[in-house]
Image 1 (cartoon, rainbow, N blue to C red):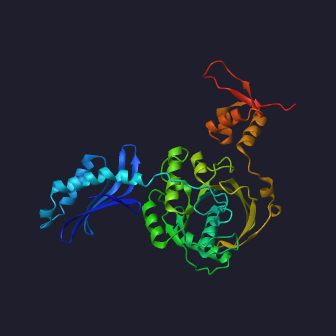
Image 2 (cartoon, helix red, strand yellow):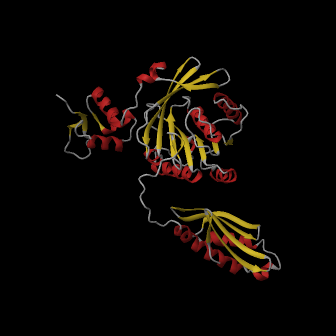
Image 3 (cartoon, rainbow, N blue to C red):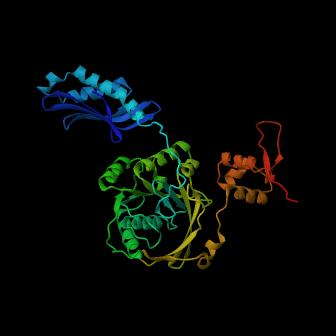
Length: 413
């Protein structure tokens, strides 16, 4: 019984007697703090005998599923397969599973190619094979923007932005099925498409990204989905979004699910200059888009600023106008900041500028005070203060280690 890689899992089989084969399968294999875990399944031919999600390095867990499976083995198969032999097969299989997975994760020699083009799913906002996070305050137009991109890609519709046509799926964790259906009809209409044009949607309101991972994987495989849109990242369900591990885990799931993906995120209450949550979200995304909006009557101005872009370079910001009626979105058109005065007045600020503006107002402050006022982490503030010694100066540096340093802005006179 030699385990082999089978898609994203590990598989092994052994012929028992004419027409009957023992099959062992492990999926969702991952190393956790207590050991290697997996969804473990035992079959005779296509018949499932038992399955469990367990620590495959624990003998008690393997014994439990072996006993459970063997209860389903009837004559004459129990003559060809003893309980001890089944347990032995499971032990050998589980002992090799992690090594089989690791064997696929080996370095290879990669030749450089400076002329290799950067391809876009949505130009310039979503890179082919990459991930994008679009963030802003709630009720600012990001869900409509995400759905506009989803339909544009799915239909190969280039009215708003150049798109690479490919099957798309919208994962809805926020709204009712009726709300999504109504919005989809409005988006189709605004793009000049048939209002009834369908889009593959996973409606799982109230659930988390962690909850829907497996059914999403099945849907993606079944429908050949290449581009997924998640609404929203705040429902990752992996722990405190301000901690690094949940941030990394959410990005890992999105990278596993989609060849290309767009996730909608939220800004903190105090500022829309950055994404709420761990800096690992920023690090994991290839592109970060800050959405600013302004409502004037039945029209909402939408400005898209790329604030981080791997392999893309600087791109000009873009302003669109979303026109609404009592039902929802009716039309999308190009606009300018001149049409929306507040958008023209708001510019995204760097962390350095936010710290500097606060210190110019406060006069002096500790890194903790600055972090609370700017909604940055204390670690980011400390790094910026130390790195930009041409801008910031230590106003008070105590001798006692537990007394905090007080910072100010260096005089330019």
